[in-house]
Image (cartoon, rainbow, N blue to C red; front, side, top):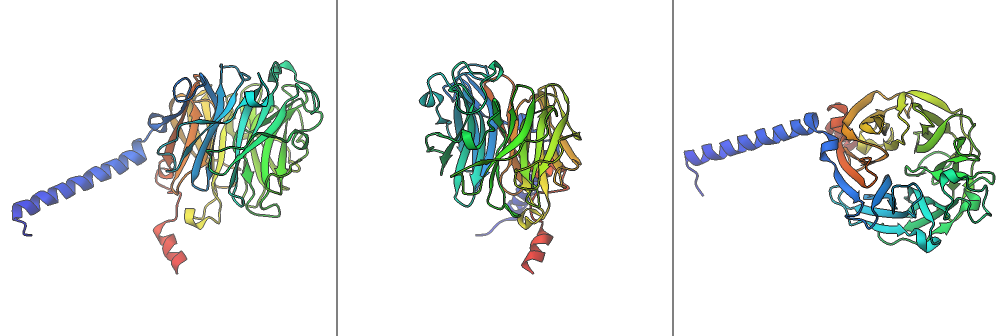
Length: 406
């Protein structure tokens, strides 16, 4: 096949134009990308779910299967005969399955409600778990439910499991080994739990709770399992009177647990604490000056460890939260296990309430968030390059690949 000069020039022009368009798209992607404007609906009350309301989102990367969970509510109230609903993605958040009910409250007790879904992934067993609480009919969080485990109106902890995110086990009650006997209220997460990957407690599943004898006097505590969820144990309580509420947590580079908690009842700085023994005991609970709180839950995840060479060999923790009431989200990143948060970028203007964040494929992470209308939960894929303005790709660089090959 022969090409004339005019054909060659035309082809060259097309290739040049394509290169300019690609370069422009990349520049737009890194400089003008606004997460809020690129988000898609995952749960939409009265549309893709049977429930009129959806709240309390959480998200997890289960070995490449991205799982989003939330409360499907029959009204806007916290205890509204909620079910636990789930949607999954097999392409790192680009498309999502039709939501299903993973745990139906009325199957457990007519008129009861399920709250605070907390996803965990057991990498060794390749099993997904969801921790949550059951409130009996008429036993709302603010109605002073009875302490302990015996009264039929006490708050109880349950777990469901799945291998594929589509088929879920029947709820299994684990209250006696995951809730202190004097506690009246307990709340898991609702951020994801962790399976420790290093240190003396490697393999342990950890779920952190805010727990209270009386409403508003919360402490941090954790349930943990060393046998893939067959049995659970409850750790000690943190110190009280520290104005904490909903909790989020990640594993540290040394195998510890770092917790960020909502400040309650008012605004201020978020509370942080650590555990060096897999959630059995806690350090002092104190405010963190770089993590402001507008009386709303926050998202937290580990993107990478310092020895994750395929992700650039950097320790990275991501944080999401609103900065003005329940609007205008912010994303922050720490390179030193939560001590400092030098990277920060606005998510975009608009309603932004409860949120959760998780790593996706190398170079990307995802944020799921409420738009504060009690029925819509959205998700967006975000490039690490956008967050860091090109200073950190979130993956292995070419020179690092060359070194590792050598």
